[in-house]
Length: 243
Image 1: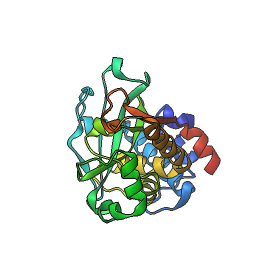
Image 2 (image 1 turned 45 degrees about the vertical axis):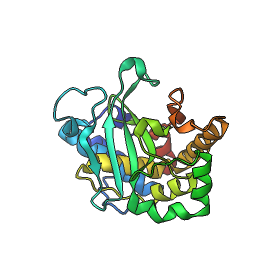
Image 3 (image 1 turned 90 degrees about the vertical axis):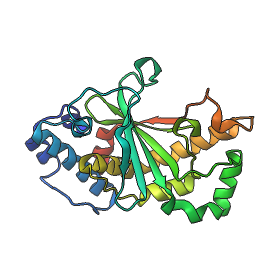
């Protein structure tokens, strides 16, 4: 990334920035995540491709559509995501091209709902009656060049499921390894999350403060509260910090 990634420069320039490394999944720590991120954008630049080009199949992004239509599900069955865009008048971020909603599926958290922390969080949320098979973890906003620009959380009515406590959300995200058949998007999601864990921790605290501040029992269905918390991110600065 850095300014080179934002301008989608030649692959050899990105290769030089990342020291020519092409790391495999499993590289640990922020340095490994940064190298994987650079490698993903280097591969795209080498093909003259956009991060979401294959997903959109060469067509213009259609507002409110899910990409892929049935969502992308990890081979392990633990994670799920989709990409979409709101109408321009509905966007809080005018520079946002679209965003990814990232979910955890039941195998990752089903037994954990009995824990004290999850019971307390459920009470904070107003003891919802439904128990859907997914839990929304966070959303990642992207600019028109396909570079992550923000992280945010949304109220449960937006995605039609529920949330996990902040601690369990961080735990599930920290151990995330994606394999949905969209390797470069998976790498960008995974690497961005691993690079931005401190920001995500603050995002979860802000989300819970917003939930706690809601006086009524219908806080998860309040249409006036769509985004519960949001943080802008600068991956250039993050990468400089781990270089």
